[in-house]
Image (tube, rainbow, N blue to C red; front, side, top):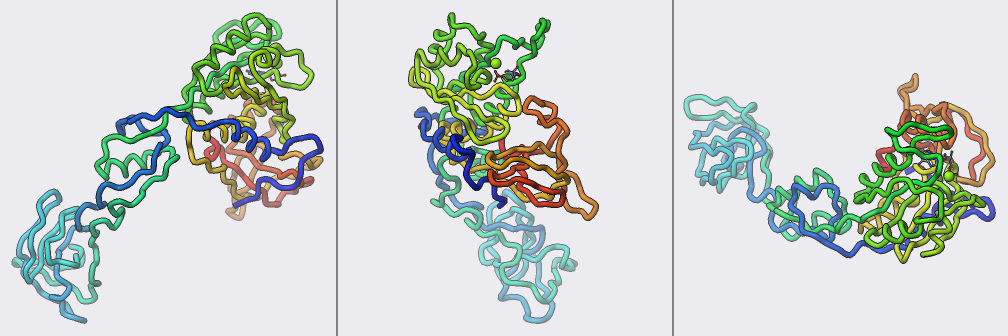
Length: 413
Ligand code: AMP
Ligand code: MG
C-alpha cells in the first residue's frame, strides 16, 4: 500500500493523524440497535458478529449439467461406458445411485453414492448410456455441503457496514432479519452571511450554499441520518438556542464555515456558550482550520468554509469520527501508487491533497493529471477529478514520472 503520511508537521500544527485520532477518541458508538429485514439493511452496520445457522450449500450438489458417477466405477486410463439409470433436476430430492451414471443438472442434489460429476460436454450419450472419457478426476464438479460456509462459522464481523453481496450471503443462509445499529443522527448547517439557498435570487456579494449539499451526500454515504438545519446566519441572537435544540436529539453537530482563527464569528461564541470548542490548526492543505468540541455534551465539528477544505476535512477527520459513532470497524482509505504527469514544488510540513484524474499513459501505465482548478474553493476541481494524490508532510518537490499515492474518491465515501 502507498504511504500516506510521514514526517512531522510544521511546529504548532496538529498532524492529520493526531487530529483524526483525537476526534475519534471523543465519541462512542451509538447505543440503539434494531432488527431490520434484509430488504432494509443495506448500508447499516452489524451490531453483532454473524454466525452461520446452517451449511452453505446446504447439501452436496452439481456444479454443472452432466452425469453423476461413482469414481470407483470408472476404468483407469481408458473410457468407460455406463448405463444412465435416472435423472435429478434442481429442486428435486436426491436419488440413490447404484452402479451406472445418473443424469444431473446444475444445482441438483448429488445422488447418494455418487462422488464425481462429468460435464455433459465431455460425454457421448446414446441409447440410454454414456461414454465417459479417460482422465476424470475424483470429486470433479461437485459442490460439497458447507464448502462455502460451514455451520457455526462467523461469516461477517461485528462493525461490518452491510453491502449488497453481504445481504446475498445472509439471504442464502436463510436469515430474515439482522441486528444493526441505529444510524447516527447528524445535525447539519452552514454558516455565513453570504450564503443563499439554491432557488433564491442571489443578492450582491451572495453565493449559493454548496457545502451543505455536498456534506449531506457525504453523510448519507457514511451511513448517517441527516437533520438539515439550513443556513445559520452569523448573528448571536437565536443561534445558541438553535444549537442546543440540534444537539438534543442528534449524535453529532456538523457545520462548515466561520472557523478561521481570529474571525468575528458568532457560531463560535454560541458553541462556547453551551459547550466547548478547540480551534485546531491541522497540518493539511487544504483544510487547515477545524473546530472540534461539544454542544451540551453532543460532539461538534466545525469544518472550514472552502468547499475543497470541507471535502478533505470530512474525509479524514469527520469520516473516522462518524465511523466510530456508527459502530463501524473503520478501515482507513487505501491509496495505491500512480505515476505523476506533472511536477510540483512546495514547502514541506503539511500533508497535501491534489485533485487529479487518471489517464492511460503511452506505455499503458496509469498517469495522474492535475486538475487546473487548484484553489481550495474550486468545486469544479472536485467534480471533474477521480481522486486525490497525497503528498506526505516531508515531501517537497515531486516531478513528472515520480510515483505518488493516489486515493480514489470511491475509497472515501
Ligand atoms: P470561511 O471559512 O467562513 O471564512 O469561508 C471560506 C470561504 O468559503 C469563503 O469564500 C466562503 O464564502 C466560502 N464558503 C463558506 N461556506 C460556504 C458554503 N456553505 N458553500 C460554499 N462556499 C462557502
Ligand atoms: Mg464565513
